[in-house]
Image (cartoon, rainbow over all chains, first blue to last red):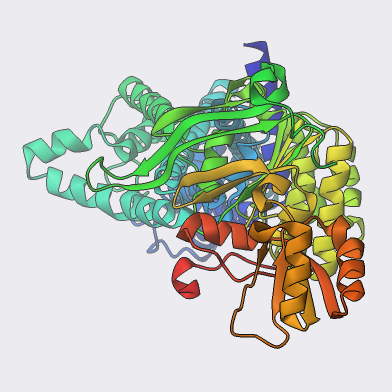
Length: 287
Length: 343
């Protein structure tokens, strides 16, 4: 047990070094920050300043839009992009981290260094998880930074959200991004390459689940199926925190499941992807 | 170096002396009926402190066997024990350094960072990577990205990785692939120095010259089966002497006096004027043979030791017939050819 812990820490340190210096990681995370900023603040601020409410916030009043730009709404803004493009980007990240090693032959090299495969993969997924926590914290800092700047620029009062709301949003954000990152990691492992993980992941999160939910609205059995899909769980978890307005166009944010059921479903998927990855890696031939 | 440990009988070996021991190692891909057997009932041993050459043509099953020894793939049947324990266990892998079928590294990282990543997996300090780079003469290019390396540099980085942590057993699969002649010579020197330092080296190759020069024992594998396992000297057999002299009849008579009727043969009977005469005598008999021939009035043009190269031995093992003979020093880049190509 002591050796396993040591090997996991060693593997995690090694993985951290190679992920830190990988331009693809910075690019993927950079896109996430850019999109979060653009869809969370840039478009809404543009609509607020110009009074043009036709884009992405149809039906909302100027006051409502402005309220979303202020620090009190930062916990919501942190989460709103996660079910859709946040999830897609994390699938890409997980797929790259797990899958590229098979093409490059690096897993083969790593598996002959000493630590067991279980320790190596646990270390790798631990590092990915740490990366996700850092990303969520940085996104939260970005949201607060931008909203405070807007509030000060527009002369609005600085009203802060409750600490509980902030913590809840950060935890939910970590859980949702972890779900998709480990999904990408598992598919990247199963496919022994990043291409299928990235392609399949994007089609799944952006197309398939939405289509099924569309079909589910008229077919009962399909609707029941959509209730156990990872996207439904992640969207419902976010929806339970930031609320879903009937006219709210935030894609992927749902109110299908209760907060508790959504949370446990997401946790279940995280554990399932973890177990799938460890089991497959431990049993397979590495060539 | 050769022969120090090789002559010792296997029975006398204790478990501690056997660094690698496989029994009936078999790998089959696909179903039992329609599947393809890549490694078939391979039993071999590598002893502590020796350089073991694992010989065979491309596709013979060398790399698959080595992968099973390292725990990268599971045998269909049979066992592989490394350093006294089941192959692939974490407490074994840490004591084994390996370069298997080409170096696998992160292309976006520098050579040094790649080694640092692997050093961290082993729980070693970063300076282990710097030392390993120096051992393979890559220190000055260590900060360049791996993707910019030549094939030979990538190969050297793979060997550097295998050396990190001073493992007891170093498994090198075709380590001279992509190296220029100078690089190959350096690699051979490195392998010899590792063995002198007490490390055991298991070297797979299809380049017979390098194996012949540096290995204590060899295992020959073809079509997944071990054909022979012995010392290089045993495998090549006894040395003979080839004499080119005229008149041939008189040379033959002298030769028969020295080596006996059974110890003399003519490889090419049609060459009646200056054809070769081969005597089953050691190379040290050359001066005596020369004196006897000259005393009998025979003009001697050439006397040379005649040794079978590993290439010839391999063809004999795989095809059951003799290959062409070769005289004198062996070309170090002889390669196994496909049987079809030879025919």
